[in-house]
Image 1 (cartoon, helix red, strand yellow):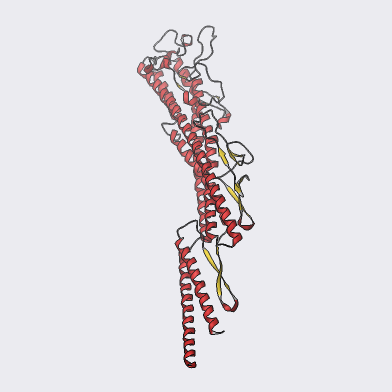
Image 2 (cartoon, rainbow, N blue to C red; image 1 turned 120 degrees about the horizontal axis):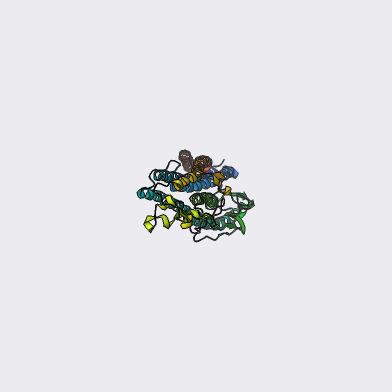
Length: 489
């Protein structure tokens, strides 16, 4: 090898090492960037022994990335569901909570027992009405809480859809840059990192799967197979409802014109924040609302009065509890959406509204034809005992509420609280499991493709030594040339 060639090789080494150091420095700068992958300068040997950087590549692993996208989407679904169930649980507490419908029904029954022991005492009669009022208010409040959670979910669905469209628009621009850079041979490693970062954010909103194509192109589909991106971003649409009532149904979500959430469909998504929000809005809250409505219907039915005439001709009418459709009694065994929100104390028996609390003992809340204590005896307790028995008597409930179709209103209320608590505990356990899987997937992806500071610092030291060796070679050749010229002279 000639001295001139040696200098050329050393100079190429210095240039190459400088580029490598630049890449390593960039890696070190991105140590705390979870979306950055490790970059590597690819060195090749040329004719005569010189070296050069042929290009920059990154450490990517599509399998681990896909695993993370799936785990993240599933985790987001369960996080949304778990949060909503915690809010629902706070509306009634557990089965031992004094604010639960089951506990308040028990308090009403106890108040009736006390009244049966002192039927002549108007103050005790007032405690029965007060217990009934507290129970009705609790059902009203629980219904409002369920409605608020549904409306918040609907609002969050609109936000999620907006985020999805924005992310797809970002992905389209980045994908175009990747395809263009791939065809021109430009360094696209940073753009690829940015594109992967968008995919990670997108998986938070909706479950996705990706398909890589020639030339760096990529297509995105929902976890159910609906196209979200193929050359261009597909539009995801949703019409939010301004105020969802217990009887109203939320709008579905469409992707590329195909329903993916909100309407039972073979292409419905199964993961991501969007899937969780729709489940909360359309399934969990509606099931719980129907249970509250059935409790309210059971109370109206259990405390209803019947015609006490010698020849009864009038239909049963609302007694202690009534509602917007009173005095008629709701149809047995059928959910009336929103009934728990309208149940109230009959004004005829409410002292605060000018009513007479002693009508709980005597009957006649629905009118004189419904009076049980025809003689007005102060010691009369038959109607009070009838009410106590009725609260524990078995009756029919709508099976669509996901609870036993036959039970007393008291037991049904206990079953409702137990149902919610069991669902919440199950969701909490599932959320922890999915969070663990998401964390492990993230760690595995980071270990495989992320930047290690220790490794990069070691590489930097090696490159500095290589740089120094190349510099010494140039100095040595320079001295040799100087000696040669001096000897010639």
